[in-house]
Length: 277
Image (cartoon, rainbow, N blue to C red; front, side, top):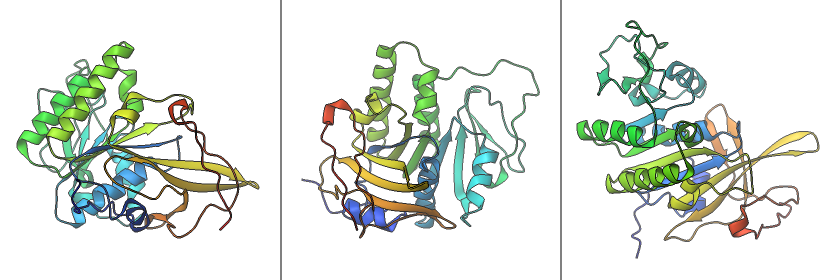
């Protein structure tokens, strides 16, 4: 029986759909096509943790920390207390005003506010990146401090550095088990370019929030669905959302305006038909 304690996401409309927020201490996935707002979602989730006085860690693979910082400045968020782990294999370190934390020459952690462009003064080859090495980086970071919230952006890119399909599956199983045993609430950002494919992290995670972009009468419409939330009831109706000057806003009391079907993986082919608001 799941207790009543929930972890707010920082998006009130989504929290309403979730019955108060996410069940803490579990790994979840945030899926969607490129440009659907997944990274913004992740930073907003971490920002809520900072607002509550807890430690938050953003693991970036796709973008340099300086770009992440620039992208979220426009929302007016105080991202200075979010720590960032640059896990890209080309990362060697960052010029900062504050010292960096180095572990086994495989990671560079800095405060977002202090992040600058990467450089490689010694000319050494970049460290290898794969799922086991990322898990090691996280273990070393968790040994130093407790993080209530972690975002990994993105699993899609991380898997490109991995070997066979079996290795990816085993690696993802181990990573999600590690995150759960570490009692952190983690969001794994994953692109979903092919609606007929179910990626391992999607069915292994404890829940999935999916972001949609749809062209309606030459206008881009955004909507959000909670595909799964293991161990809890939740709103199954797709709800519209906007990316505003203050971040993501979900209109949990409205339905999408047009009738269309969201594509789903073949393991769950039933697709809800949207009604008019």
